Image (cartoon, rainbow, N blue to C red; front, side):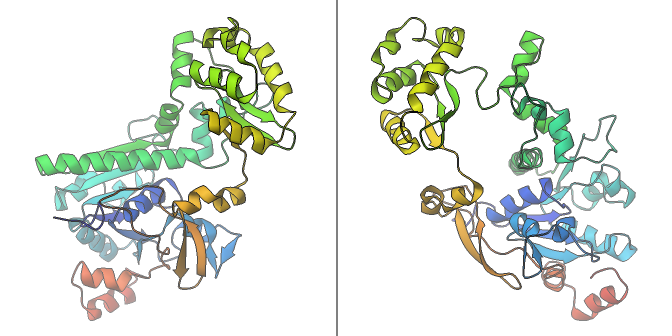
Length: 400
């Protein structure tokens, strides 16, 4: 059987809001899943109010992470609303929520309750600290997770205070980890016929993505030095001032260093100098080596050095602003920047899926939904409700 997209036929019931959850449900929608986003009729996802900027009264933030979804407004505080949501769960493959761990239990829609109506349901929960943490009921936020997971401490220069990553990468990485777990659970369900529970914490994800820095701390029994734009391991690595701007340079191994010396900066003797020929030597003589490289690179323009490095197989690149990055030829050539046509925001460019697949490519970017835009359609198509029943639910306040 040929599928137009990898997750065609998978239906996701999405209770998430803000970023960690919406990011991964957007990725699942890109891959072809039908994502039904459940929103509060009174305002919807918090990020609908995150502005400026805005376009056609639509928040830039909401538009950025909710493309390709269906918005259904349900009042979870009503008996009729909760009954409707359980009916939807019975027709879905995956449920994702990022409330505090007690919220869904309070409304009778925790994993055990939903498993009772659909044993094949994969139920993913995203929270700040995880279900079995002593802080399970504390709300989780990206900046707090970056700080408590060690990432903020590692970011910045050694002589300056810690700095959080500007992009909310704790949320994003947690979302991506959730997505990998969901795909693994879908594969397991193919074998067992049963769903399972997935528990993701922002704090866990941040610690995990510090990777080798966390392992260095474990082995040394002390915190690694804050590397700034350097590596703390490889030499030379960093942001170097050229004659007309800054350039990122990364020498990843001895072979690259040899090419850098011989083919880029015209110092072939350094390639065989015992002080610099291997990583151990470069680490021991880092200050002298970096000072000499700084002096050489300052003498010519950035584009000269970047082109020369790339021709020699040495990793180098410019430092672009966000506007420069999205206007650059590389993402344009790969169709990463796509145009969508929104009902109220009109036509605008957005960042599409970065995933490339030869057989089941992601869907082209489509606009984020208006609040409650698909309520009637989903209730009719998925649950078979007629218009009279939908009208009665709306009159009773169960749906928006």
